[in-house]
Length: 377
Image 1 (cartoon, rainbow, N blue to C red):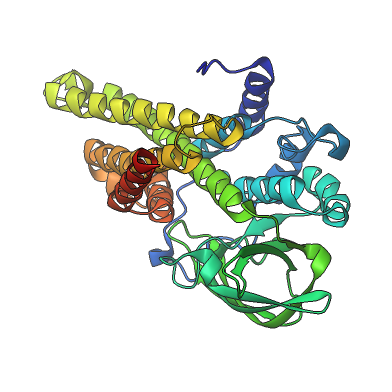
Image 2: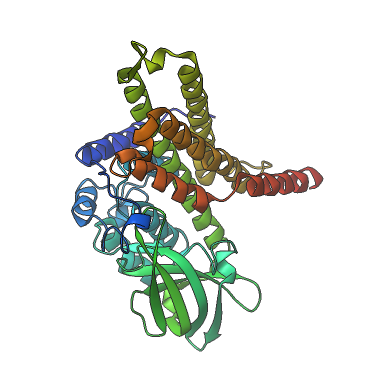
């Protein structure tokens, strides 16, 4: 395999660096010290700049105004966005639009994709189930009633639920198949209850009570949800990598300036060893991320399914990003605990990403099951 980025992928990353160069995360306190979320809406001005730079349509085909690029390109852009904690639904909207393009019907494609690529229609995904620990597709039931589908159930912690125009809701049918329903915000039979994430952003608990969705807005293709979940997870690993890289850079800069006993603490062996260990974590997170993103776009006959590579990426991302921010807080000393210092915000976001990815032990168990099944087949 060749992990050299193409010119188009590098151009996307360069454009992202240009857009995010003026974004600076501040020291907004965590939700433990505020009443409710830190903001009522995502960064609409930044969203507009991303649209102007054609970064919201990376995965869309040219006929829909997109660049026709792949998951690697999206992850390169997400990596840059996490370095500044960009408050935009870039991952969710891009992944949802890509799923509609890959598996949706012609009516859904014509109604959504061009507008999503221009940032005019914002999509998000309900991917956390009823409690955040169960399978999302099992939290909602879907049954046919003539030409419509009727949805019942609850999805918790839906990102950007109060701001997105459409929520992609995975659901299961009576024959144990998964479908994806495109549910408009405020749709009849739905309600939202406000929640606040570890990052301080506003989430929504989405309740569906006999919500009726037209058949044209329900994706029934086999494998659609598994593919979308894989892209969301890989994108989350990219966010963890970008955040970790920025935090390690912040730590390196601080350690080079902070002096003790007449010397920068970066010259102390204990500090250098800890920083080196975190650098190794980041390089492992990076190589497993590109492996997973590459596998999403290029299946290899006879190999493990892409879910195996995604599991490895999740193991490194969930553990690695936690170790990076913990070391950063330790080496920053008192500044690491100061809620007015930007590092505090990175720690909160890192914890949110870690919880979203889930514990490494669970991914190791899933990987073991995949390896065993592959060996026996």
